[in-house]
Image (cartoon, rainbow, N blue to C red):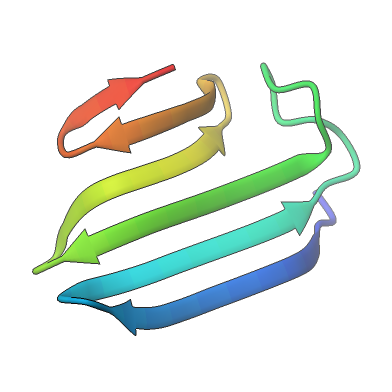
Length: 70
């Protein structure tokens, strides 16, 4: 899959790290219907506190601590 990086950010924020990647993809990542592949995560002490992404097979979803929601 040839993807184009639209944005990439990694910076320290408060007590953790914010990491974000936004890619434009030639075809949607199923079951998403849009041409954006993304990841946004806030990590503290190596643990994901909050995250949003659209992983293949799961589509758009979020993570709060160890829990995952649509």
